[in-house]
Image 1: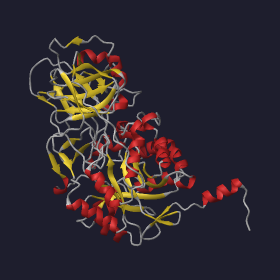
Image 2 (image 1 turned 90 degrees about the horizontal axis):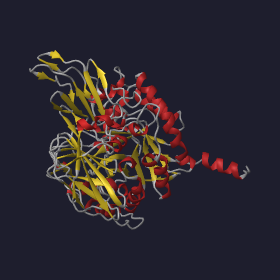
Image 3 (image 1 turned 120 degrees about the vertical axis):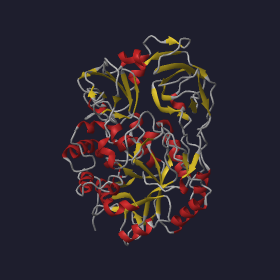
Image 4 (image 1 turned 45 degrees about the vertical axis):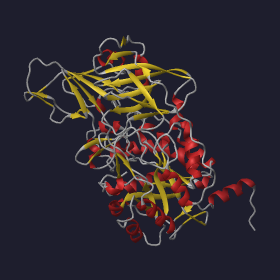
Length: 589
């Protein structure tokens, strides 16, 4: 009989723990049958102060597993600079899930899609003119290796075998819809395994991508919204005698500017019937999204399958929990269908429609240029954002870039489609990055700003002065020390407008800008996201933890037309809506 001391016994039990297994038609966890009932909540789209609230609501719905992506571009904003603190404390988020009794499926990418700028890939990768994203190109794989060297050691101690909540890790994301390099998925798999990932590996693809998205020894899962296309049957035929899992059951859909708000009504027979069938068949399922949250700042992605369409800052997604964490009819229906409630749902946070505030001062864009991090760059030819000598030569990732050059005569000004994405033209071109494409074959072609010549009567303009306006918190703070003008004077656009919101008890709210045109909103230096009168998003979510008792500074960057007041509402408002169940989508998460 073998005898162990305490430390030996601990090691023996750890080494012999049977994590999530896919050895038959159903999953097992520690040898017992197990069904994954998951929900996606992205820590980077939820204020840290609300992580516990959102996860408790997920658990109270009857779900047992949290899934989340990991955005490379936030964790390594500059090459070799890594951020894993405060709102980006991934380890704290995973530990919290474990403390609350939830398992975790981690989706570390490096590409995540997620309606996130460049699918979560850092824009500095695009400085390499030969770059081939999501391939075995050495410029990409070396960057992935450096990133994984910092990321994966934070994850491995949180795996199931080490007493943590992580039971599975996803290899890349929907690669079958990209499939440009047959060696790439093996590289990502080995990059995970060689750094100590030992839990079950998964891939995730839509039906059409299943054929090309797999990799040897890794369980395939499928993404869908309807059961009418045979997606689950296709997966079963590809993997006989393996557990079936819908990694992304799309609870709604994302929105793009200028189109209706997408909804997937909870009371439709189709949604109820699909959910009931999946549950009755014992299929594992993850709700994408369970709570969408917000793409704060400039982090939204874009769609381009022939026409470029930037996505909204709101990532409400018509999910079971709203953007601000409220329960919906969909939540209660899901809780009833699962019939596995563990606890009573937590109370909803209070919200308040603060009184409108008057805008008191403004400062024009031209007067703000001296506050830019990189004062200016001069070159014969225009330089795209990513190649500007900003941010320690990592380029400009987000925001606006101002290009200026002297024109000495009139003529036919032609951008040759080299302006990405929008501009205001006199002798200057103010170019906004509205969001890089996050899905599809256009990923390699996502440089922003001026990406080529601007011609006058077919002659390329030369001698450009360029100003980087990424509008970081430091820029907004420096702006406060400048001389602002009273709004009694007619402003010169574009311009920044300022007002003060006095708060007694900080409470969640939604900020509205009726009769304004387009721009960005900052509260106490934090970038809430974009506003645009074309809709469908009519208000920006302002979390209570981002406010403080007393004065709160509201700054609105407005491109075209400002009003005299900023308004507030208790609820998110949309214009026209459209039922996604009546549409056939070619774009996928």
